[in-house]
Amino acid sequence: QSQELSQVRIDYHAALQSLQEEGTRMVCTGKMHTDRICRFNYLCYSNEAEEFVFFHSNSSVMLPNLGSRRFQPALLDLSSVEDHNTQYFNFLELPAAALKFMPKPVFVPDVTLILNRFNPDNLMHIFHDDLLPIYYTMLQYPDLDQDARLVFMEGWNEGLHFDLYRLMSNKQPLLKEQLKNFGKLLCFTKSYVGLSKMTTWYQYGFVQPQGAKANILVSSMEIRQFTRFLMEKLNVSMEESSSGDEYIVVFSRTINRLILNEAELILALAQEFQMKTVTVSLDDHSFADIVQIISRASMLVSMHGAQLVTSVFLPRGALVVEIFPYAVNPDHYTPYKTLASLPGIDLQYVAWQNTNEENTVAFPDRPWDQGGIAHLEKAEQDHIMKSKEVPQHLCCRNPEWLFRIYQDTKVDIPSLIDAIRQTVKTKPNLKKAKPGIIVHPGKVRDPKCQASVQGTNEARLTVSWQIPWNLKYLKVREVKYEVWIQEQGENTYMPYILPHQNYTFSENIKPFTTYLVWIRCFFNKTLLGPFADVLVCRT
Ligand code: UDP
Image (cartoon, rainbow, N blue to C red; front, side, top):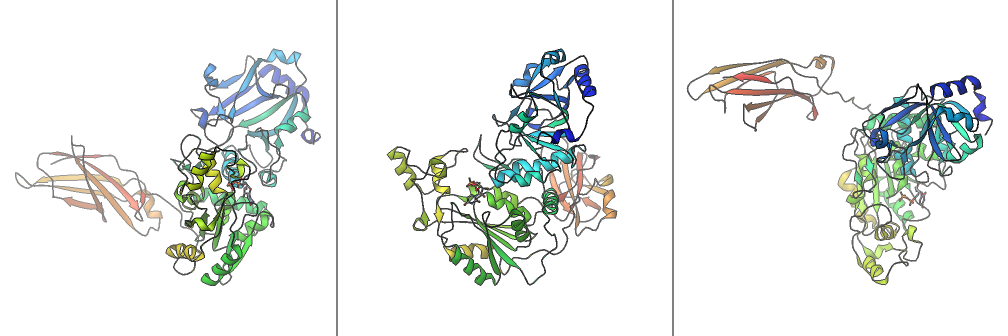
């Protein structure tokens, strides 16, 4: 391991000299600590202090230079989870002159991306908080290429799926613990610190109950581009399945939150949908095999849990069936529903909840983190046992939530099939056609209005415009226009939907009045364009 860094030879004396003379240089993007990513030359890390160090010299740069606001609360989030107080990044400052009295720095020659993984033992967290953000942070900065080095500072060991992190670049990622092997003072020649949050779709409930993020900025394009990258790295073939061998996948958990009648469920699904039905689990299959199997499945059935993030590998048109234990309201836990509803992702989604208390098996005597409640006061235990639904709560240690979510479930098969049938009438329909590319209209061009007065009470307003510039290059099923007419000074307007490029308005148009007219184009019912500059029309 310790040899690895020295494989790329750098001129040690030149590096040391520029660190001493130039010090650290930092330039960041982002207005707030929650959206900031910083690029550094010669950011150092003291293994002794377990702190990053910024060396000041006459030619250091620190942008933004926040002064002590850098500690309110931090320079940036080191993980993709927003504003989590265990995930903050900051550095200590020293004059470059202090280097003379410090251990000889060891230089890391690779371009490095420094970040915290959020929960590297949990597949949902691995994909949502780490892999997707790493992939798109690397895409944002071209020198973070396949030879970049990832450095994980959260302090965990490799975790259960370290192989997935290894796929992100050709260099072995480094853990915080391993930095010690390289010496007391480590200096990253060129590094980026922080992760893009652009691709995350879920907030885990640290400040308000968990749910979809308020402002989702990712669509299926980015998700599928990332899954194609991973599949290539995993050597999973991307050929589509041929029609006729459609199948259903049941992703089973083997340790807890079990489906107690899984065999019966598999038979019933196969029978009902006349499709082969296979099971996978993280114990019995390699991750690559799971991806291969899921990437051609028509339906993925699983208990609520991290393994459902593998829905990202489903083909377009497939159905996700998520099973919830007794007293767990599916509407309150929607990471996979939100995923299956991302714009353009083309997945169908069904949630089914066990509502029959007789079909649930709870484990009050297990440790608290597996849902045990024996450590609680008797009254609280009784209250939890009697409750029919977990009230909404914050992350992460709510005992009633843990108690309920770690129940095993005997699935009421007719009821589950019924729920699926409400969504898919025959067989789930895999989409063979390539997805339509989503293009929004441009502004309508050359908008004009002409007014005429018909009498003391009657007037007309003729509005016309040209098609958006990009329309002539597109095949669009349906092109329509929206026109808003507002009497100047009023704060309401009349909206119209029009199929053509001109229209004469006479209803509600008064003589000797000024109207403001906004026009925009939209494609296929929902793809709105921008409004053209407002027209001011006097009748
Ligand atoms: N896990 C598993 N089999 C099990 C239980 C858990 O493979 O029987 C995996 C699960 O997919 C996740 C990790 O172990 O990656 C942690 O599971 P946990 O129940 O803590 O989290 P959840 O699935 O509720 O997110």
